[in-house]
Length: 306
Image 1 (cartoon, rainbow, N blue to C red):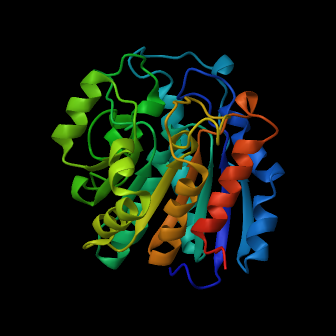
Image 2 (cartoon, rainbow, N blue to C red; image 1 turned 30 degrees about the vertical axis):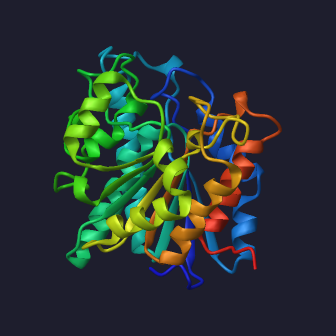
């Protein structure tokens, strides 16, 4: 799938609100639709199908279960449904754009992209754009919130409930790049260092510039792969730009840096699929964050300044 070609996109909402400790991310997909994502994509010449929402329970309906990995069985069921929905979209020749919802949904969307790309005989690259590494496991997590664990599972670690591909791991560390990190637990720092994933922190972005960082990230994610999935947590952006996110942390990407990430993804022509996650309208100001996410999706699909 080449980004420069007009093609089909499927929008898939995942109103998942079980992975974090703040309610509200279940309204994220609606916020994107209110921001007019489908209409704006259509103006780019993209054929858009809105596949609706993957049904997700709310915490009030469920017991949290194991305190080290709260709601993990329910989250895994949602991710399994998302996995199948994304595979169906790939089968229809469409690129899935998954709207969240908390970041635990990445266990489903990335797994589907990995399963799909393996049909070409090549592995999947992954660019994880996030203030957080999401590589805690149930033993290391201080909170037990599963939205801090999906990348760990994708790389083959715990929680095993979120390992959905027939093959494991879904992605390999050497093809995985984290961009924008600035908020890690002490134990998680050790996990990230030991994992051998490639990391570009906000300090790296300050030192090198976002253009150089993304050039390196894309080179890593495309080397020997069949393309890459982009999992974009809006909390990577500074809260002045994206106030309505599940876990805001000061010192993030500026508005232009956030767009450069996606513009360079589009120029590469190698993106297989996209997540836009952790939009929390209860914390937002006039839907600013979903509107930013919509603009970022457009940049990722080829909208240019000139």
